[in-house]
Image 1 (tube, one colour):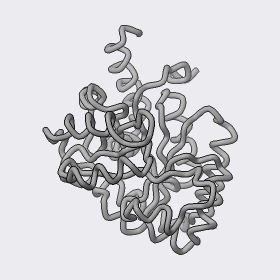
Image 2: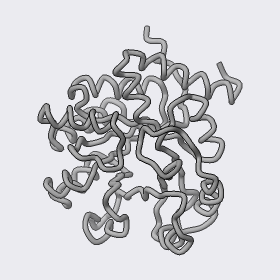
Image 3: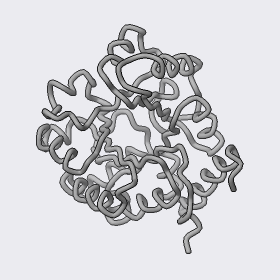
Length: 258
C-alpha cells in the first residue's frame, strides 16, 4: 500500500501543470497530492508564456503545450478528478490568453458545471471579474494575487468586493525563487482577516516555498502554504512521494499527531 494513502489534510495548496509531463501522468500526480492530504489542489492550464512563473513551471507549461494539451483537454481532466474525488477542493489557475481564445462565458460556464469555486488568473485585474467573465450567478470567484506593497486604498477596494480567498506573494519575485517572507505580510494578512465584506477570507502565501520547514513558517501567519516549483522539481527527480511525506510529517509534528 502507498505510504501516503491515509494522510490527514495538511494546510497546503499544491500546484501542478496539467499535461506535464503528459496528461495521464499529470492526473496520476494529482492523485498523489490528494493521497498526501493536501487541502487544496491547484491545477494550472498550460500556457507557453507564463509571465509570473519561474523556470521550473515555465518549462512544464511549455512541455504540455508542445504536446498539444488544450484547455478543453484540461476541462475533461478536471472533471475526471472532480468526479472521482468529490471532497477534494480544486482551484483552477490559468493565464488570460487561453481563456480569451476559448471564450470567457463558455469558460466560466464550464467552471460552474465543474463546481469550481475559485479561479486564479494572474494577468487579469480582478476588477474585471464582473465585467468580463462573471456569469449571472457568480458562483466562481477570482482570487486576487497581491504583493506586500499593495496600497491601503487598493486593499480596501478589494476587501469590499467580496473576495473570500487571497493569494499573497511571499516577496517581490517569480515562482521558484529563493525563499523570503516580506515583513509587511503579517500586517497585510491582519487587514484582510479583519476587514471587508467576505466572512473570514482565507489567505495563502506562495512563491519560493521549497522546504517543509518554510511551509510551516508560512502557515504560522497564513491559512495555506502554496507550493508549486518544489513539487514539480521533486517529481522530475522521482522523489515526489518522499517530499510529500516529509511535508506531511512536518505538519504532524506541529499538531502532535504522527
